[in-house]
Image (tube, rainbow, N blue to C red; front, side, top):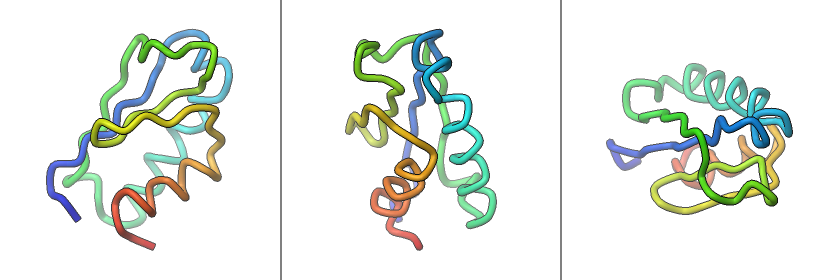
Length: 83
């Protein structure tokens, strides 16, 4: 896994209300359970510019939209190369 992966999570009111509060919890648990918290930077943004498609997330410059906690975990596994 790349040592400097950045996960950017939209915390704007639209994305937060549509589920990024739950997605944030799923990300934090995923990183903690796999010991990745020190190798992944988790950053919150007020807006990622795709409000209609939210909730939104960006990992290593790649945008993801319309997320649920389950699909966030699948994306993290794929992007971070872990199970």
